[in-house]
Image (cartoon, rainbow, N blue to C red; front, side):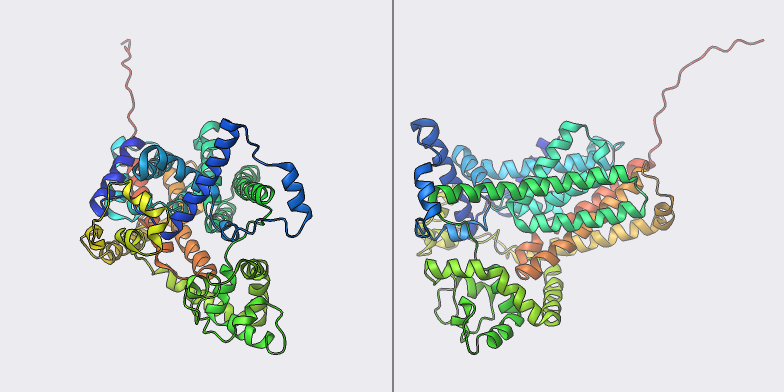
Length: 507
């Protein structure tokens, strides 16, 4: 059944975009995955050690022992494990295989959710769920997007299953769910933070409904162990990079860029850099610093910082990132909270598909991007765009399906509220009958909606209100409404009772 669900998602991909899509960061993920695969190949085929311990000992004992490779300064923001999957699957079967793999994971996880929430539902209702998501949500766009964005929603679904429905699965299925959650958390740090928030919301709900402590502790421990594995896997890769190159695996100063663009960071910068330069960003206090994307990636020397800096400067920015962001927040806590809340508000309603549906001709003809791995990935799907980049553009404005999906999503959230009202949710939640599938499905439906709100808070406050961040997960609203309706209708169906004829002796 999940295979059919994946085919439905891929069919929607063909109708909407016509092909799997890439993004600028796809190049970084692919390059990381390739470096991992090549290191393993050298070890397996030629016997070259993964780590040369003599070289590693020198690097670790000498401050100048690293190779000072600038890319390592950014790789910490990307998951090498996602990059590994991207590189391997693309090499074996082009981006089409990778897109299908993501669609199959999504369809399989949604099958598990459907089966747990509506165990008495007819098989046809699963296809109704998948058909609704394929036709009326952003899910198929992101399953075909060579970025870990789709795993934001899948992490939320996995968390809900492990917190609300663990008893519906045998241990092999629980282990699979746990592994998928750990992978989704590792693929992007925002998924880990959102899942932790969703776990906290689940704890509050389960405590309110008087779930036994023994059951609650097991569920929480499962999610926390998944988070621990995600963090440990990232640490293991960082250690391997350190041993092989001598470099610390860093990341761009996202937090610094955020607080500067928000305003409190600029106030703090003007205050603390008056008579001294305790932070490396003091050297740029004369710049506007009002746009996080410009601060990080602009090539304009009047606006850009990180992308234009040499490696030593980037390294200092990395080391000072959290320290500067914390000091800035403490300098103006009310101001930062106010701006972060406004970013949250903007993120909730900021749903567009410009990036996943961007014309691939841009990457094929841009002076810089045409020198990266992106043209190879795009051409593997059969697209070449000819001499004109416009030949690959979708035939509609990407904003149109985003508006439609956004309206449908918020109508779906309203429908869940209406359904709860009609079912007299106060009485249902007062009874706290966990054996009632409708009761438990109502909790799952509400938690899926909470996940979308939490995602907006995490991404809006820490990175900024960018449309892709909300578009990637807003499909959970539609999923919540369809799932809840299926669970309600399945529970209302009378059970079939097999009648046994008994001879009755008449006296």
